[in-house]
Amino acid sequence: MNQGKEKEWQDKLVERSNAVFLVRKILGCTCPEEIFDHYQVQHNVFEAIPMVQLIMGNRLLVWIVDAAWIVEPGQTLLRLLEQGLAERESRGLNRFRLVVVGESLSWEKEWAHLAEGLGPKIHLHVLPEINLS
Image 1 (cartoon, rainbow, N blue to C red):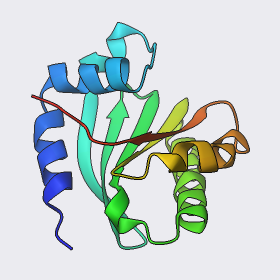
Image 2 (tube, helix red, strand yellow; image 1 turned 60 degrees about the vertical axis):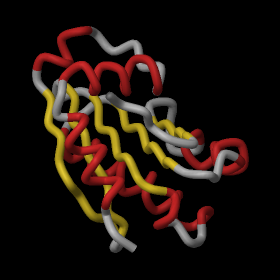
Image 3 (tube, helix red, strand yellow; image 1 turned 45 degrees about the vertical axis):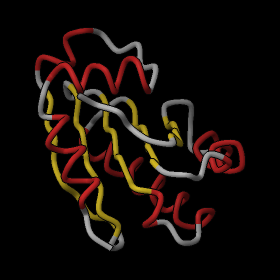
């Protein structure tokens, strides 16, 4: 499996307008405008799963993962959520959002309780695709 989607997302999210669109319009975050004044877009890997990592204004951590990399969703999503929470805590950030992109829309309903069990500032989003200009 190649990392084409991750590279495409990373390249597009370097543009501030795309980062704002993703966080505000797609994920529904109501973070203050100033978090977009300073943000980082990076490539990251967890358990051989490539992802795009956004750190927004030293407040919000977002991991974007292609659903094709997730073989056993229940176990893998929980490990990703737990590791994301640990990463958020170690960086002193406020929220963590795990975004899984692919044809697995039932996962959000089926596995949302995993994020809810970790706290109110942990979110799981499952999207069919991310359309950024």
